[in-house]
Each structure stands twice: as C-alpha cells, then as structure tokens.
Image (cartoon, rainbow, N blue to C red; front, side, top):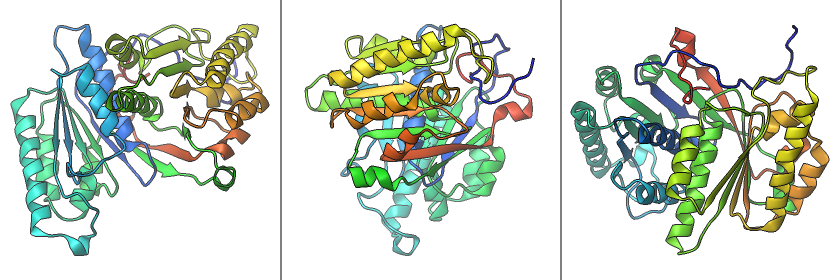
Length: 377
C-alpha cells in the first residue's frame, strides 16, 4: 500500500516510557508558555485516575507579580480547578530589560527562583516542574548554565521538566529529550482587514494541540476574573477512537468545568492517507465542520478550538471557501484556535492574527524511547 501526503496517527498500544522527560520550548513565536500549561493539564488529567496525583510547580522567572501576562488567566483556571495540585512562584521585576540593564536585584531574584527550583527538584514532591522563561535568565547571565544543567541531569527519572523562553543555551539543548522551536509567520492581509482572535499553530513539532488547550484554560480563567462564563468548544478532526495526547487534558478540563467545556471528536479510528480517503472520512469531516460553523455563528463560545483542521483541509476532506467565509464573519470577541500540520497552506492562513510554526529539532523517540499512549500520540 502506498502512503503519500499527510496522515494523522491514531491510538496504538505501545510500551509506556518510564522516565520523565526534559522539554524545551523556545523561539520567537507565540505559544511557548501556553504549550507548557497544556502539558501541565495533560499531566494532571493522567494523574486523576491513577493512584498518585500529579503535583505541579509553576516557577516563572522574569515575571514580577506587579505585571499581567497572557498566561495569568490560564494559571488562575488551573489553580481554581486543581487547588491542591498547583503551586506557583514568580520572580523578577515588573519591566523588561536588556543585558546592559541587569541590576543586582535581577541577579538576586533569579537566584531566589533557582533556589526554589533546586529545592523542588530535590524534594521529589512534584511530578512536573515548569521553569518558565528560564532560557532568557541564562542568556542574560543571571544564573550559571553549568549548575542548572547539572541539576537537571541529576533530577529524579520520574520528574518531568518543562523549560521555556528564547535563547536556550546549547548545553541545555544537549540534555533535552524534546526541543520544539516556535517560529512566527506574518500575514499582512490579516492586519489590513483588522481580523483579531484567529490563531494558527502548525508544523511538525510538539506543542500545537497542547498550546490550544492552554488557550482554553486562558478563556476559562478570563471568565473567572470577570465573573462571567467563558464557554469553550473543542472540535477535533481525524481523531476517531481514543488514546491521544490531549485526551487526559480534555477530561480534566471537563471534570473541573463541566458547564464551560464542550468537546466533539470526528473521524475514523485509522490513519487517513492522501489518495486513500474513504466516504466515511468526508462524512465525518463535514460533520465536525457543521458543529464548528454553527458554534462560530452563534457567538455562544468565547474560544473555539479547531484541532487538526489544517490536515483535514490539506487532505481535501473539506473545502476551504466555507471556512474562510465563516472566519470572516466570526463575532469579534470569539477567539478561534486552529491546529495541525499541512503541506499546502489553505488561504485562511492569511486571516490569522497569529501564526506560529512549531519546528521539531529533537524528540525522545529518536533516542529509542517508547512512546506513551495518551502522552505522545
């Protein structure tokens, strides 16, 4: 059988990987911190039905408490939904600065944060530790790269570490199990037409669907802060069956916020290859689009996630014109997150206010590590 073009791998039984991984999300594109929060949500979901809960430490460098950041609302939703599982520490001043503007206060704050990180790593109380914006701290020379790398190398084999931010030092990349770079793409048409709230995450790297789930958390958190209900719809194409990366994360979301999160999945429990599409593939793709289109027109949802829409269009299971038309007419305050890799960019990419390509530089499967169902595929 000849396989060409794009296929989305369905759930397959594999041996579980038994060691915690070091993830690095860097680059100048958007989505790094949100992807980290999506991984956190997934880990919490995996722990809900197991004998051990997944405790998480969110250690945020260069993010003083006097400033508001994009991921604040998402973290608030996490802490409201799972108050006994989430710890957060913020360090740094409330303004941006360059290497030439580094002060003694900046160094003290960086070391304060790193002392917390070292204690958390040594304690083995956490299953996931997020070191948000650690990379620029290292790039600014506020911490010794050698000490950080050695501490991470000596961590418990069951501890998951997620590092974010621009400017990852090579020594840290050398010990990372996964490295995804977020690269921005400009679309002048979107600025000319004034369309806001359309974000696209594509590429062959990890972080697309997990970033979308971080955006779902963000929408819920914004609703909490304003005493309003911000409903979220997640529509997934090409993902029939079960056992996908985001299953546990979505389950955790729906358990904590059952009245705010709706989820629809469509597709066969199989890989769809170009040239080998079946009638059911077209039927399922159209069914998912009818749900998404109606939701988009209704204005009932603050965030609509169209997961794997890109490869669905690339496989010609859906026509691009109705999608462009629906996006052009979307309510101004409705945010649309579109994910998935594709070889040929559909024309709706030109409507995106944010388009980040997730480029895979390193993946643990390249080292012969068995992938874990529900985590990696």
